[in-house]
Image 1 (cartoon, helix red, strand yellow):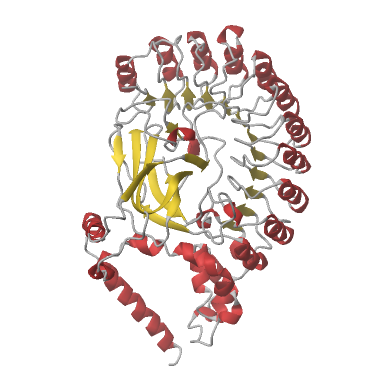
Image 2 (cartoon, helix red, strand yellow):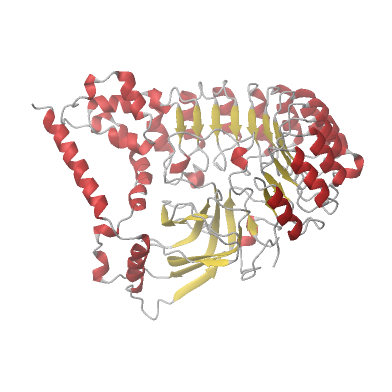
Length: 621
């Protein structure tokens, strides 16, 4: 009977936890009210007056709608006092992220999501803001001027971005978080979440964004940080917290802490002699592995401590074939990688996006990890990983011979010469260089040697001198290309478009948004429509010359079209759009914002006739 007792103990604990959860009957509103009570009980002396300040500088961000060489629709608009608020609408003076809704996830270029991502990590974008003075935060207000509701997490950092020397310690603390929620209004609002108090002063705030439920681009105008110069003293009664006030999310935040102690969690020497394995040792090894595949990394950390059998399963490299470390960006460091190293010898998909910044991961630590774990890598996500330098790309090119998918999106601190090493990865099928400093020489070398490319993103790559030459090389070498992002490329002409259209007949997605040098009068858009019948997504955003002839060519030749953006054109009429909607039965997204011939009445009529199509029409108050 001895093996039964451990099982009974586990069942008893599980029953107790269920009772505790059922006992939490307080609504979220009641919980927030209790937090407000704690806030109102904080005592401040007259000398410790509240400091109210706008952001001084935008330190880092993951994406933006605007150009790298202007202020329109860029994250840099978040610095300083409001430009627009309290007005509502689509304004160029606000900060806008690159995507919204689920449209980008439905495109041919959308990568397959990583499995085992914690349910409480749903951030898609971020922006970090520096303020003049370090304070103990009492409130953070976000001024949203269009389609609010994207902010899902606010964090504070202990590091002072204006300190002359490196910080002794860098800590991130979540001030507030919430699951994505639908806001049924597009009007401006001042978002004022109830934040928790932290035990260090800060002047570095991070907003994390999820735009998946938005009907259109969210626009942010300013961020206000309220705080005290000295640490507020809480009254005695606020130190006692009713257990019923704890929300599920409070438990989820503990996942972040697990990464701190990977060495302890995974170390077999940390296991003490405990109860027997119950009935797990009677199950087939493969069945236990299959069960554990549903656990997140922190869950594996916890389970590894229960018994030797499960520790062996939790440390099996087969559990780390797909490893997503992005959710733990705030804690992941060289030590974490070192203790994961032995378990990642078979890793094929690795996500290190957002990780390693401010000294958390060193070049040496990253190099050591890849030398042990890079041989089987097929996919490597490194978006916004600012620890990367030329040595890191050289190590990737040498240690990852099987790599097919590389994402360096917004790695804008990589020097131009570093990108030449990518040409050694001849098996690449997907390459994302959005907002990087890749130059033409390195890019042409990559295109020459990586002829199997199917997905290529060159959006906002401002250091490419001649996009016509680049397009010609793409057309000559990348015959398998299916998706191409040329968002805001500054000088492509009808010549480059002709080379693309003739050389890449398999193209299903093409983004030519904000490419001012393309003119419909040259026939370039009509050529695209005739030569690329497989197009599913075409963005011609802000090209004023798109006309009815172009729309009619799309209707005749691109019947598989699903998404079309012609924002800003003056030359398209409702009649041609009706022809397009009648021909393209799969069309689901049509953006006609600021199209002078398409008024609100025309949008309503077309929406009524084609209810399955989301027709977007932005406005300015």
